[in-house]
Amino acid sequence: MKIKKGIKLWNKAKKIIPGGSQLLSKRSEMLLPDQWPSYYKKAKGIEIWDMDGNKFTDMYSMGIGTCILGYADDYVNFAVKEAIDSGSMATLNCYEEVELAELLLKIHPWAGMVRYARTAGESLAIAVRIARAYSKKDKIAFCGYHGWHDWYLSANLADDSNLDGHLLPGLEPNGVPRALKGTSIPFKYNEIEELQKIVEKDKDIGAILVEPIRHHNPENNFLGEIRKIADIHNIPLIFDEVTSGWRINVGGAHEKYCVYPDVVVYGKGMSNGFPMAAIVGKSEIMDAAQTSFISSTYWTERIGPTAAFATINKMQEKNVPDHLCKIGQIIGDKWKKFAEENKLKIEVMGDFLPLITFNFSYGEELNQAVKTLLTQEMLYRGFLASTSVYVSYCHIEENIEKYFENVNDVFKIIKNSIDNNNVYNLLKGPVAHKGFKRLT
Image (tube, rainbow, N blue to C red; front, side, top):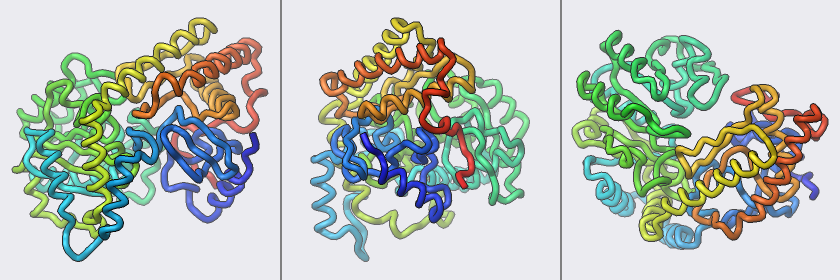
C-alpha cells in the first residue's frame, strides 16, 4: 500500500492553514504522524478511498461520529438532492425547519420550542446565551467537553488544567478575554459534591451544562441529583447530547435515565454528515432568545433541516440505536477476548456501546506509543482504526469479521513488542499527539 498524495497534501496544508485542518480530531498527528492518508476522495457505507486510490474500512470515527447511518446514505442523500434542486437558500424561510421542529418536539414532549444552528460548538454557545438571558446570571457550572467558544475555554484562564479531565487536555485559552476568568467552573463526572459546593458558594450560576454520558454510566443517581440541585437553586439545566444523542435511542440519552433537562443540544449524528444542530427546550426558557440577538444567515438554509428530518425518520423506522448497541457489544467482547488470549492489558469502557472504547494499561507514555502502533498496523491492513469505534448502521457482523481477524493479529504484535521492549522500533514515524499542540 502506497500512501503518498495525502501525506504530501497534509504537509502543504500545515503551511497555509493554521493547524492544518479545521478540526483538531482530524489532524494527522493525532493518529499517525507522517503516515496517515489525511484526505479522502470518496466515502460510502463504512468504506473510504484516499487520494492514492487505497480503500479503507472505517473502524474508527465515521466522520468523527457524524455518520450514524453510514457514509453517503442513499435515503438521506435523495432528500438532500431534492432540496438542492428546489433551491437550498432563498429570501423566504424553508418550511422544513418547521417540520423538523414539530418532529423534535414530538420526540421531546417535555419541551416546547426549538432553535437551530449548523455546528455543535455554536449551538452550545447559543444554549448558554439563552440560559444566561433567562436566569440573568453570568456564570456556568459545567461537566464534560463543550467545544471551542470563549465561555468554555475561559475555564482555563483560572487554571490551565481545568479542562484536562473533560476529554481534551492542553487547551490554550489564548485570545479569550481575561475578564471572563472565573465565569465557567468545572466539576467532575459522577462527583455531585463538587457541583453542590459550586452552587452553594456562588449565587451567580446562570446555567448547569452537562454531558449526560460519554464513556461511563452515571452513578448514584448523578443526573437526578443534578436535576434536584438545578431545581432547588432555580438554575437552568442544559444537557449536551452532541455525542450521546441518537445513539442509544432516537432522541437523547437522558431519556434512558428519565432525567429531563430544561434545554438539550444536538449536533453531529442528527443529520448524517450534513451540517445541522438543534437547541430544544422548555418554552419559558427558550423564549428568552427573543431578548438577546441570536441570528445568522446560514442557520436558515434548507439542506440541514432536510437531512436531519430524513435521518431521524430512518433512525425511527429501522430502530438504528438498537443496532448500534448490538454491534458495539460485539466489538467490545471481541477486544476483551483477543486481549485475554494474548495476555494484553486493556480496559474496555462498555457503558456507552455506540462509542465503544478501550485503553491500554501500561502507563501514559507507553500507552500512547502502543496506541500509535495499533493505528499503524491496522492502517496497512486496510483499516482506519484506533482504540474506539463510533458504530454506524452500516457496521454489520459480516463486514467487520475481517477487522476482528486483523485486530487479533495486531494484538499479538503489540504484546510481543511490549515483552521485547521494542515498541518504538516498530513505529515508522513519531508517536501520535495527545491533546492540543502546535503543529508548526
